[in-house]
Image (cartoon, rainbow, N blue to C red; front, side, top):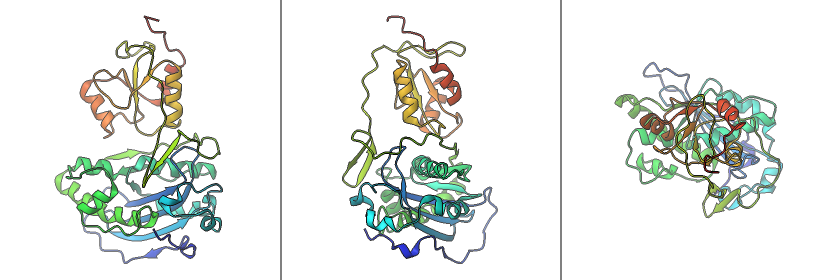
Length: 331
């Protein structure tokens, strides 16, 4: 991968704005990709690319910047951004205003948008600011809703489906370009087919994590991909059944969490495990409770909960329930 050189920091490259073909319900889109030092809540953004699109998905302009994270850059073998290269880059606080201008009034579009949103929201919080984003759209979810015949959820597969050429994988600007070019036909397919856009409300992240290097077991890097991993001991209590409104949670209940939360997801899961609950990665008829701030969202867990009648509560209510979890009847 050939990183874009520092002299392009914050410099927009403007393309002619095509005539709008039809009225649209949004102020346009900001297609975003960020490269980061890792996947934990203490990890930092090291580069960002943004393509601004009009409501029809046509490109208005694009912008790119490297970001000095003030720490080890993480997996250089993936993103190609060395500590030496980043040492001359601006901090996030120094580019935050320009970044905000690129996002303001637009739907944030990203591939695995929850991850990008969480990383961006934390960076704005560290700078004492609020990311001016109200809604996001995940192209992985949109691809699923459109029933595109993709072999997997990778950006490369979406790009190949629409004949978009990737030039520098894991380069924030090129990944944003690829996604912008693939999003435009996806947007038109959704409109032509009457498929609602899977818009999600964005909840600002306030739990920033400890400012320390990632530790083994929290972020695992394998080859050209990475994932956050945390092994948990099995819940020692059998599932007592579904939660009932007005009653306490009971040790052993299976709890799933989906969507944005103001409390870091890992923190919520840790608290649930400490209380004797089983944290489930999916929703089924056996799930006791789904925690989400967006019960009507298009997430797979929320849809399944609606299908099978799983009780749903918001984050605040869940935190209240965690204060008094009843012991398992067989304990």
